[in-house]
Length: 223
Image (tube, rainbow, N blue to C red; front, side, top):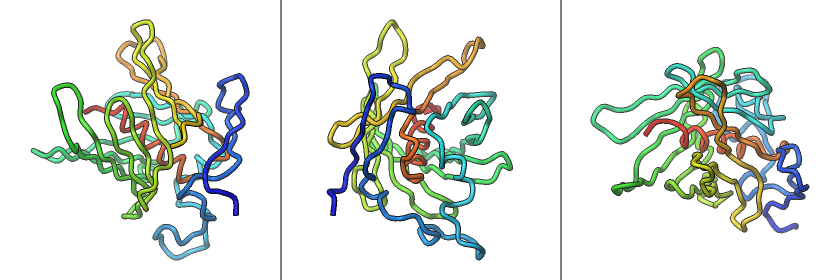
């Protein structure tokens, strides 16, 4: 059996379409079947309802409009993000919803530690009602992404700041192999808008794509 891991063939360009997986990520390598989540009776599906937009995605754009963040694919909105905070507590719930305002992913975020300039976050990523997809945790400089068993799938590392611009992040395997980016971008001429472009291999397993979307949402959402 081939060693579990993730290998990439990277061309000189950094376009997300150049990122290709030659093997599957640890923890995301099991064949998809309808039993990895709890759902209502009906025909077997290869993924939970609502995640179909991620099947062929390799580039997504996340930006804030009004009080919600929007997730765009090919210029069209596919998800929005609603934020809930418990009164007097440090826990924040972020719900990624489809256009019908049905929950697709639920992010339960807590702060593990807090200093004068930084804090560590622990984000549980669930498919409704309570199916654990994985965990994203870390601080400003680096996040680690884990499957439900706790295995590290990949790291989200902060890049160096350039020209007084907010730095973006690069997505790498635990062995340091580049697999994508989370780049800060300007979504338009309107000031005050925050935007992030997410790029990853198109053939990445759908649960891993969901974890990357969750990581990006947690990064750009308010503290």
